[in-house]
Length: 179
Image (cartoon, rainbow, N blue to C red; front, side, top):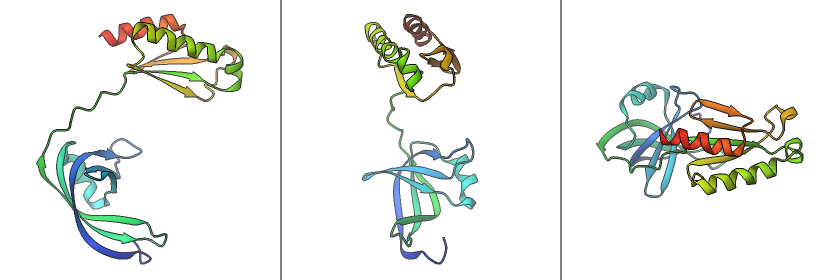
């Protein structure tokens, strides 16, 4: 980690492995660990990455042997040198993420042309049909379709629908979520 880091101590951390984190799929640099104090993110050394990605399963109990170091900004850094599985404890069933997402443009052009009314109409329609808990409504920036404002896009899995009426969105959602 460099000579500017002050080595504090060696430590062992045991916790439940939650998963890998990284910007690209398959190129994970960090792992997430659940410990009694909360969740922590630990950077995996390069020499351990390939073996860990193929062997660790979310929900597994793991032990991390690491060296704690203090950087010049007085931030604690963990440098693991050994990570091993010590048992398996199934993860609590986390709530499944919403399968559908509605993105509504909130830029000034769309707002002037009725984005607020569209948003309230969407929320009312979804609430009437009992779909509001199965869908996330995301406020976005410009969707680059200003000529057809107000813009909203419905994403169902890998399908994307644009410029759809709120009643049609509710029907599409009911059809998608029933299958």
